[in-house]
Structures are given as structure tokens and as C-alpha cells.
Length: 540
Ligand SMILES: *[C@@H]1O[C@H](CO)[C@@H](O)[C@H](O)[C@H]1NC(C)=O
Ligand SMILES: *[C@@H]1O[C@H](CO)[C@@H](O)[C@H](O)[C@H]1NC(C)=O
Ligand SMILES: *[C@@H]1O[C@H](CO)[C@@H](O)[C@H](O)[C@H]1NC(C)=O
Image (cartoon, rainbow, N blue to C red):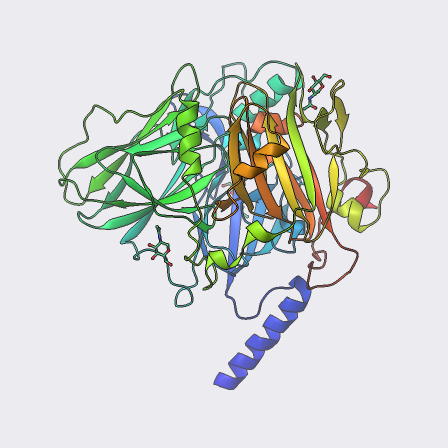
């Protein structure tokens, strides 16, 4: 009996592995997510939002390293939809990345199954809709990848519990927009109106009142993601400090902070020990670098507490840019800690690797569009990945992209960088504007080796942290400043590098990296999925 069961299980697994390139020893998870409209009033104003299985924000997705996930999206909106998995690499499978350069959007009224594996990942991530401005309506949530129990020890004592905090800015609509905020913002962006400031902040869908209950003297892991579209956010807890342990899949040196900045698209986890009196405490988030500060609060409740929280709220930084840059430099890789696998992070010595290419990316902005090196990205109707796979001409041209800032008028274009698998690339983000930016790379983590003020120059290379820089997928670039990252392009495919500030991404501040070698092999890239959606010139 046991033999029959295991044999059929094995055959099933083998059949699946050959189709999807998945790994036989890892569990399978099947999920159905029903995407619908709903009415909610997060800030006291009724508005149309996007729900997942009736929830706003969407459900917290918990899985383990290497799980094989079959997640079916049922798009019950009246418009096309795509979900992307921010920070989840989709190893060898940019087919599943869920952005318009890799996937056709799921048409209204139809379903599509993502078949993905959380290969070699552990940490705190998030998901959100990638099409148009939809994420301003919701449809986002937490994506937590836990270590494989019994396989890999954590570099800190196992916490008594976990709390997931989805923080972010929030907008509501004026009475003239019956549809969601996404439609309003899209209208404004398409017609050259400026981006409005957020109306407020939310923590797990509410501006106040979300309650996390724990026991006195115990330590909890707080997973925090900024899923907002515009605002950098500071987080702090009344009477408690936070010990940073993980940033987008890297275990970091466990430093203690009174407050932490989390920029759009970023995630981190902290340990909080409930070492106060048995009562309730405020968790506070507030916007950074804005004239008018917006706030949201939640409650950290000690089990058995009957003392409601009271002010004053702990004070956080507002404008201080230098403060934030200084804090960012303290985030460092713990070289002796393991990550998803039981070998120390420090065995990967990035400091000794030869840089094969330097790309300097300058922000560009005019009244109507945003861009990179004066190219404003336009999405072709055929996903780049499909055009590449089927050799469809006329969708993108590898000569369009620019490796450095280039004077001239901003032009529309589909910038795709021609890069080789295993290239080791230095990316300089130069920000000459007076607002703080945030950049995210799909499919990879990069080493954040330096932040600096004013103009980057090759002389700055002496200042790079070549030993224990944090390895993450989203990084801020302060106003009138630069940030440098180093990335080993070890994931073959078509990968989006984008502004995490969503209206900038929408209006052209993004590019793609084509990470390639000419050797067709399942060792480097999975086959095109059998259920691939086809659109544009790939529809034929
Ligand atoms: C999704 O939700 C809608 C509205 O509640 C419902 O009519 C529909 O049957 C659901 N679809 C699926 C696939 O669950
Ligand atoms: C680094 O990780 C190790 C586990 O390998 C842990 O014991 C140590 O406390 C960590 N160091 C710091 C400073 O966080
Ligand atoms: C874009 O062009 C303008 C006008 O020539 C120039 O001043 C600016 O430096 C360019 N920016 C980038 C990032 O290429």
C-alpha cells in the first residue's frame, strides 16, 4: 500500500517536474484567488476597492522555501489584471513574473494559474496588481516565505509569534469618480495633471485600530512591507525598540532601532520584545519628506491588558534626509548567518568579482512623462518575453537602451538592456530631483554598496562597501543623491527594473534587463508554460 502510494506520488511529481521544471522534494500548494470589486471606506469615504476572496488588503500568503505554488487568479473585474510578486525571484521563470513585459494581462472574466516556486528564498515580501494604477485600489498583501522547518536554523531565537504589517499611503476619490482611485489617478496621469498627495496612511487596511496581541516577556517577529505607491514611511512603537533581523531575504546584523524608514516597495522584519507593563501601546507610521505629514496607528496589545493606549505618540523623523541615509548605511549583511540554505551568506564574496558592465541610470521628468536617461518606457502590446521567445520582430530593439544619462528631449521607447547570464553589473542610480526615489529589480537581489550626495563619479568606488553590503531587491535614492548597487545576473529571463513610485513607473520610469545566453537548457530556464496567455503579435 505504502509503496503504491509513493510510486504514484513519484510519477505525478515526475510528470509535473518535466512540465514545469519544479523540484520533486518540495510540497505543493494550490490556491484560488477571486479578484472582485467591493466597497470599503478605509478613510471614512466610501470608495470602490479591489478585493481578493472578499478581503482588503488581500490574504497573507505564507509558504516555505522551495514550495511549488499553483495559484489561480479569477479575474472578476471589468478590466484586464496581472499580479506581480515583489521580491519573489521566479527563478528561471520570468514567464510568471506578472508584469506587462513578461505576461499578457489576464482578460476580464477569465482565470489564469501562476505555477511558481519559491526557490532558495526566505523572507518578507509582498504582492500587488501590476497593471495600470490598479494597486491604488488594493489587491495587495503580504508574501511571507518561511525557512524549511528542520532544514535551516534561524540566526535568532524562534519568536513566540509573527505579526504582518502591510503599510502604505492611501488615496480616496472625489465624487466625480464613481470608479476606483486607480481610474482617477490614471485619468490624471494620462492628461498631464500632477500626482496628488496621499489622503492618509493605512496599516492592514485601516488608519487606526488594527490590533496585534502578544504575551508579556515574549519576543515577536514583525514583518513590515510598504505597499504604498508614493510615500516613504517611518515606523516606530511606543515604549519599544525594534531589532532588525531581515531585509528582503537577507539576514542582517541585528541592530536595535527606535524607528525605521521603509520606502515604497521595501520589506523588512524586526524582533520586538514585549518588555513593558501589561497595557496597550501605539504602533505609529508616518510619511517622510512631505510638507504635511500623514499618520496611521495600530495597537500592540499585551494579553490581559485592560489599559487602552494613550498619547503622546512617539515622535519620528519627518524631513531629515541625512538621518535616513545614515540609517540605511547601518543595514549590513550578517556574513555568518545563513539564509534559505544552511551555508553562511558570507561564503558568497561579491567583493572579489570583476564588474563586467556599468549602467548609470538618471531620472528624467518632463510635464507629461517620466523616464530613464531621457527614454520614457512604453509597453508594447506584445510582452517582451513572448516576442523574444517567438522571434517576433518589431516589438523591441536592443539598441534603444542607454547606459548613461544622455542630453536631449525625452523620447518614448521600449528600453531593453542586452545582458549576459552571469554578468556582474554596477548600477548607479543618479537622482538630480528633489524627491526621494525607490527602485526595484525583479528576478534578483543586488548588493547596496553605497549612498552619496550630489553627483556620482568613478572616484566614489573607493567608498563602496565590498564586504557586507545588504543584499535586497528594492533601494531608495535620496533627493539630489545617488545609490550604487552591484548585481550578479544569475537568473536568465526578461526582468523589470522599475521605479517603485507607481505613477513614475506608469508614466515611463522603467526598463527591462534581458539576461541571456544562447544555450537552450532547462538548467538555466524553464520551458514556456503550457498555459501561457497570448496577446498582441504573439496571439497568432
Ligand atoms: C468570485 O466572487 C464572485 C462575487 O462574490 C462570485 O460571484 C463568483 O462565483 C466567485 N468566483 C469564484 C471562482 O470563486
Ligand atoms: C549573525 O548571525 C549569527 C548566526 O549565524 C548570530 O548568532 C549572530 O548573533 C548574528 N550577529 C549579529 C550581530 O546579528
Ligand atoms: C535629459 O536631457 C536634458 C536636456 O538635454 C539634460 O539636461 C539631462 O541631463 C538629461 N537627463 C538624463 C538623465 O539623461
